Amino acid sequence: MMKMLLCFLFAAFVTLPAQAAEKKAESKPRLLRHVVLFKFKADAKPVEVEKVVAAFGDLKKKIPQIASYEWGVNNSPENLNKGFTHCFFVSFKSEKDRDAYLPHPEHKAFVGVLKPVLEEAFVLDYWTN
Image: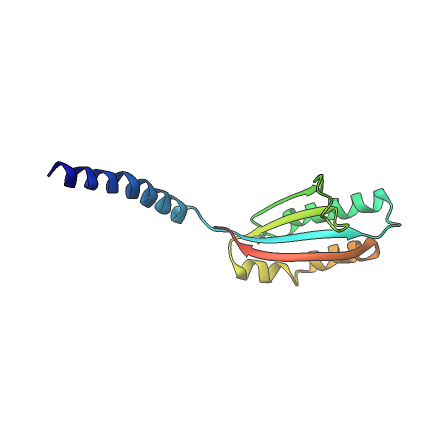
């Protein structure tokens, strides 16, 4: 009887926290992340790159479908960035919001600022877990 009780308590100790963590994760709203990495042309001037960064950041104020935005410059010591220096995270609450963002006139205007100094872009979208 004691052995059975210990087994029950052990099972409850192991499964209840896991179930609570799952419920907590389920209650947290998922976001659709639009990850964009840029490799700029070798002759791109720092002021031109700064203009791109500022223009990308301004999209949050101009396109209401953007839930959140962040960016940064690579500082990894691994040297595996393959020339990509800038990473931008644009988050959306739905695929519909992302799909409205892509052809948005303000996004297209931003691409016009970007193209003259861009060598290559890498884009990946994923749902947060």
